[in-house]
Image (cartoon, rainbow, N blue to C red; front, side, top):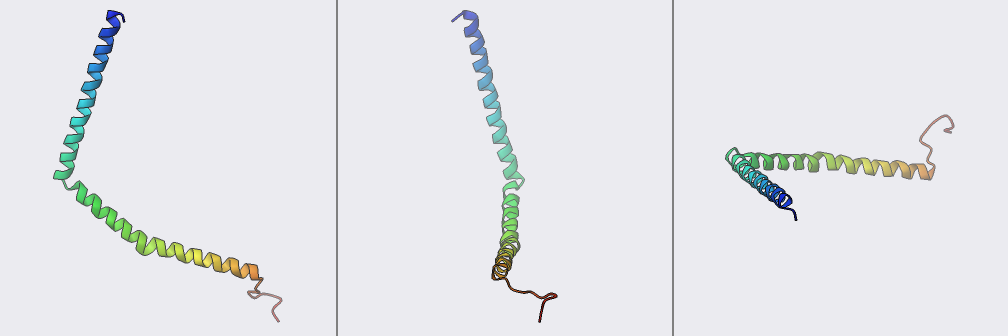
Length: 88
C-alpha cells in the first residue's frame, strides 16, 4: 500500500474507534440517567396498565365480534327469514 493510503486508513480507524467509544459512554450515561429518574419503573407500569386494558376490554370485544360475525354468517347460510314483507 502507498504510505498515504496507510495513513488515511489509520486515521479512519482511529476516528471510527473514537466514535464508537463515544457512543458507548453516552449509552452508559443514558442508562444511569434512566435508572436515577425511574424511567424503568414507569415504563413497566405503563406496560402493565396497557396489557390489562387489552385483556379486559379489547380481547373480549374482539371475541364477541367474532362470535356475532359467525352467528350472522350461520343464519345467512341457513336462509332464515328475519322478517319482512313476505311473512305469513
